[in-house]
Image (cartoon, rainbow, N blue to C red; front, side, top):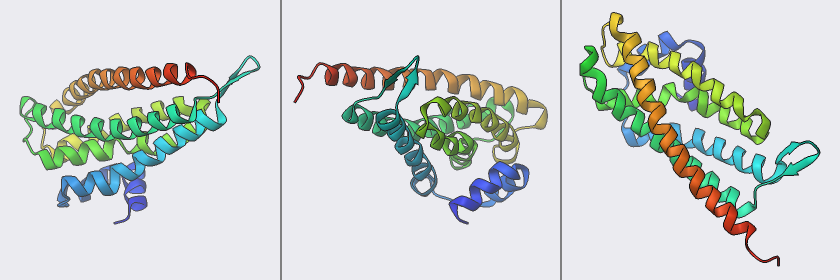
Amino acid sequence: MTIVQRIKGICLKPKEEWQIIAAESTSAADLLKKYVAPLAAIGAAAGFIGMSFIGVSAFGVSVRMPLVTGLVGAVIGFVAALVEVYVLALIIDALAPKFGGEKNSSQALKIAAYSFTPALVAGVLRIIPTLGILAGLASLYGVYLLYLGLPQLMKSPPEKTVSYTLVVVACAIGVFLVLGLVTGAIVGAGTVATVGLPPH
C-alpha cells in the first residue's frame, strides 16, 4: 500500500482502515522511516519556506525568519514530529492495561503514527504562515482517529475508549507543550544570535 493510499484510507474511511492496519505486520523502523518521516519532512520544508521566504505580514510590516534560523527550526521541527509520534506510542502502550486493553508496542506505534496523519498532512499549509493554525485544527480529527483505533488495535473495551482517549490526549498535550517550549527556546536563541551578527 502506498503512502497516498494510506492517507486517503485513514482520513476518509478510518473504521475500515484501522481493521486493515491491525492485521499488518509493520516494523517500527519502517513505519517511522517510510510513513512518518516523509510527511514530517513536507511540513518542515513548508514551514521553512513560509517563515524564511514568505514571512508574516501585519499592519504593513513583513517579518521573515533568517535563513539559517529557519533551516535549524525546520530540522528541529522534523525531529520533534518523530519524537512526538514515538512518545505518543509509549503513552498509548503504557496506559492500555489501565483501560482494559492489551499492551502491544507495535500496535501502539501504528495508532500514534496514523492518528497523527491529519496534522502531518496539514503541515503543508505552513507554507503560508497565516494558514498554520489550520494544521493545529487538523489535530482534532486526529483525536477522532485515535478514538476509533484504540479499541481495534489495543483491544480496549468500548465503554472505556472515551476515557482512554481523553487520558492519552491529556498526557500527549503535556509532552507536546514541553517539546514545543524546548524547540521554541532553541529556535528563539538562534534568531537572537543571528540578529546579533554584524552585517556582511
